[in-house]
Structure formats: C-alpha cells, structure tokens
Length: 329
Ligand SMILES: Cc1cc2nc3c(=O)[nH]c(=O)nc-3n(C[C@H](O)[C@H](O)[C@H](O)COP(=O)(O)OP(=O)(O)OC[C@H]3O[C@@H](n4cnc5c(N)ncnc54)[C@H](O)[C@@H]3O)c2cc1C
Image (tube, rainbow, N blue to C red):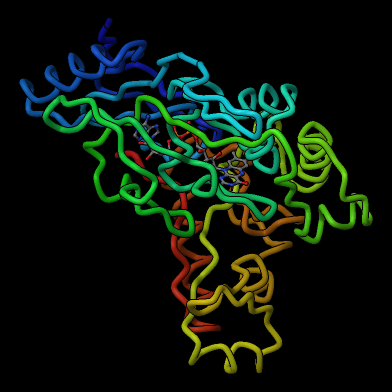
C-alpha cells in the first residue's frame, strides 16, 4: 500500500479535490495498514469507491482509501440459484452485465448505476422497483478493531437509501454475497419497464438490463458529459396521518405500508427549479432531482444551490429534503 500525499480524488461531479493522504486498497491488509497510519497520525480515515455519490471539499483532511479489492466466485450453486461473492472494488454495472450474461436474475434492474460493489450496500442502491437489500445474503466488513467478519442482511439494517454503514463508518466493506436465481424472479412492474415490455412477461435478465440501460440513458445525464451524482435528494417519507394533506395538494403519494413516499422531484419542480440555473449549477430538466454541475469547481457551489432548493421546498411544503450523497471534508 502506497500512501500518496495530496492525492486527487475522482468524482462524478467534476470537482477539484484532493485528500491529504490517499491510497489504493487492493487487499484487506491495505485497509488495516492505511487505518493504522491514520490512527497513528490522529487523522480521520475514509474509504470511497468510484466517487459517484460524494461531494468532496477541495482539501479532504486525513487518509482516503480508494477501494480496489477484486474477487469473484460462486460460493454455493443449485439448480434454481446460486450465491455469488464479489470483492468491493469491482465495478457495479460490469457486475450487473456479467450476471445478466450468465442468465442469473436478481440485479438486472440495477444496471447502469455508477460506482463500486462495496458502496452499493452503503445506501442500499435501488432503481426500477428493486433494492440491493432484496438480493444481499451478507456483507463482509473490516471493523474498527481490524476484525474481518460477515454481517447478515438483517444486521445491515437496510432501509430506503440507508443502512447501518451510514451510522458505522468504521466498518469498511470488503466483499458482498448475493443470492441470485436462475429462473423466474422477474420484476418488470415498475411503470417504465412495464411500458417497455408491454405485457411480455417471459424476458431474460439480459433483456431487462438492456431495457433499463435504454430507459436510464434517455432520462438521466451521463456524468462524463454533465457531471452529477444521480439523485441529490432522497424522496421524503411521510407518515399515514400526512397522506391526505399532500394528496389534497395534488402531489403524488406512494404508499409504502409504513407511511408513504413523496416525489422529491415533483416538490422541486413545483418550486420552479426545473428551468432555473444559479451560477454554474442547475437541475436536470428531465429529472430535477439530479443537480448538474456546469463548471463549478468547488463543492461549496453545489451545496449552496442544494441549500436554496431545500429552503424553497421547506417554505412551500414544510418538508426538509435530505441530501443523498456524502459530503467529504
Ligand atoms: C448518473 C448517476 C446515476 C445514479 N443512479 C442511482 C440509482 O439509480 N440508484 C442509487 O441508489 N444510486 C444511484 N446513484 C448513486 C451512486 O451511483 C451509488 O450511490 C453508488 O453505490 C456509489 O458508488 P461509489 O463507488 O461511486 O461510491 P462513492 O461515491 O465512492 O462513496 C459513496 C459513499 O459510500 C462510502 N463507501 C464507498 N465504498 C465503501 C466501502 N467499501 N466501505 C465502506 N464505505 C464505503 C463512501 O465513504 C461514501 O460515503 C447514481 C449516481 C450517478 C452519478
């Protein structure tokens, strides 16, 4: 493990940022060594993947490790399904394509989500009617004392864009195990996918992944052209008692069983942000939940814009939007 002073941090927002010390983590021993160095120097230690869900400050204090642990093997296989173990440093989208190519069902709806395998459990990535939590068997972590252990899906405490890892940043994810099936676990009832397949229920994981790629490409900005971190805000959760109030405002309310979700994009749109640009930041016109950086070089510019959006939604609807990406300071 090689520590690099002022290592520049790649991020899909296109911000200029460097870590006081950075390193590439190829083995779990690298994580142990990098953390030991940080502790000895009294510095914070963080691990990132591809930087597609972070807002990094120009100078990030401490040691930042970039996860690169690679491994991929079948742990257990039967006629109906298998359990696959994947190192945290793999690229998520490439994993989706690989599984779809094998004909394995489970993660095809999560195609084209940028980032690493290790970051996927952190916010329980989700899209097109599927969340990672539905297929995770267990997650391997190096805990704060240097112990390597597997956490069951239950211990990961997955929720909507949340998990225990957001509360326990000392747990560094080194691998995950996924339960995949060889037949029949098709989830195409999400409106965009249902429209795409128009009643054809007998589809392969490869066809579903291709459909998701098509739909996403038409709707979402490519970060290499229009820098962004995907959804900047989480959809707000309301309780049952508030449902009638928001339905009365003619807003979409998605019942979840324990309360309901509002569409943050709709709230932002209603506040008039869809067509507005402040400085070099704006909402993506086809999906105002996505903030696009048109030349801002510093995290502060993005955060100022986000804070203005939050303030206007709070004024109009008394809803506090929660920011999805991690701010790295
Ligand atoms: C265009 C675009 C579309 C997107 N669409 C979606 C979507 O549909 N659904 C969705 O859920 N997300 C989406 N995202 C967000 C993003 O892709 C995911 O959050 C992804 O999992 C981030 O992976 P990463 O490796 O880039 O993580 P990073 O941005 O590098 O890190 C994100 C967070 O995870 C922590 N972390 C990373 N790796 C580890 C590890 N090994 N151990 C412990 N902590 C770790 C970091 O410290 C940080 O807090 C989108 C982003 C973009 C740019």
